Length: 515
Ligand code: KIV
Ligand code: ZN
Image 1 (cartoon, rainbow, N blue to C red):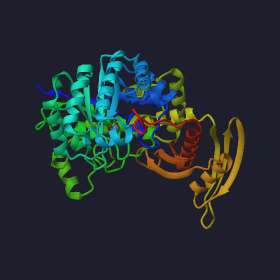
Image 2 (tube, rainbow, N blue to C red; image 1 turned 45 degrees about the vertical axis):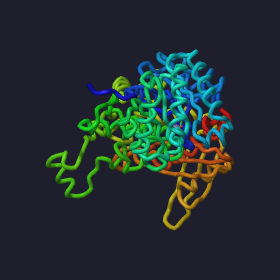
Image 3 (cartoon, rainbow, N blue to C red; image 1 turned 120 degrees about the horizontal axis):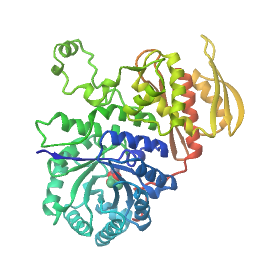
Image 4 (tube, rainbow, N blue to C red; image 1 turned 90 degrees about the vertical axis):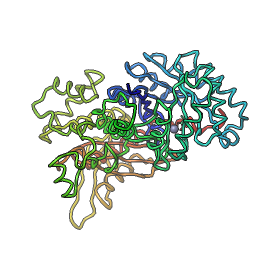
């Protein structure tokens, strides 16, 4: 019998720590449902102490999810633990994940605590968390640069205090696979009662080694892997769920363990996370990149046509790429739409939501003959974006581009319930449109990213636009989708402006001094 690895997804927590990736409560619930369909074992839904909004998001995920464990992160302080405990209370199975740093540099420079004080605080935190749930995870932040002997001392103490999962993070992405594997082997062998807890790996990708380090950890006793969809996360990101899961699934000849993941849901999950966060997936990204199964060279194409396995180690269908086929069209009704949305993991939460998406589906079907799953995912993501558009809303856009002339844009917006109109010229049509919008909104924000990608093939494809704005240290991403890329660009810019106006600055679990 093979061991089953626990897949702990932290897209909604560590993933959300990517600059500009903040998600609304509704978006988090949508992603959580997709993760549940993927059969993720644990969903880390957020850091409830960060803000009232974060608390409510974790609580909403706890209410919406039935199958997966729902987890809330807390530092080792009373308020954080209590808020995490309250937030996960509605979950069928709730977990509190509490952490404190154990490396010399973090203890001395950040926490200003002695090792003895850290052990005492860790034990206190775990005991307090146990008052809310039997499922308590303890993380030794920056374990990858901590003294292994000290780690054993901390882990021994927290297991006695009631921790059921022990997480060893390579917080700064510094470790090498052999070294990280050896750390697991040492710690598991030298911690008293190590058999009473599950050991977990949490790797960051600063040196591009997160997946390799996680595999080394499982080869040396880890039975939980912490990861994110598309490898989203702090700085260079975390272990990519799709990569680690497919490495294990594809190399069953080598590994003596597997996961419960329904790999056919990987691509839909990747698309949904990318559309909601505005973080595009690079074309050559393993498993979920547009080119991951594309063969350009004639020799490769010939080989694959004769026998797929000459150049493919896994099938595109097994990770969900088969979705790229016509599923609905102009004559499809509401029930067909509902059932397709359900089967791709984005069931509408209410009749009202279904009605809104149905209206947009019909509009799209008038413009575009074949409607693919990717189109539906984009419609659902765009609907969530529209709901956020309370302060600024696009009423109309007219763009004129002519050879030898500067492009001009004329934009009408609703701004706090009042209609306003502005015109502008620009270096290009997008520049003119954004200038016209900015002349009415006066945000003063810097545009640091503008990217357009096609949702499906063909010139009638919807365009998905991502816009990133920065102002006063805050970063937000906006998204917009439309068959007309000028419209999708204007929508994305306005979505980012709405986020800038609404989302309060949130505290970050790992950037705060003290415990
Ligand atoms: O990278 C890290 O150390 C973390 C912890 C909070 C687990 O994200
Ligand atoms: Zn992390």
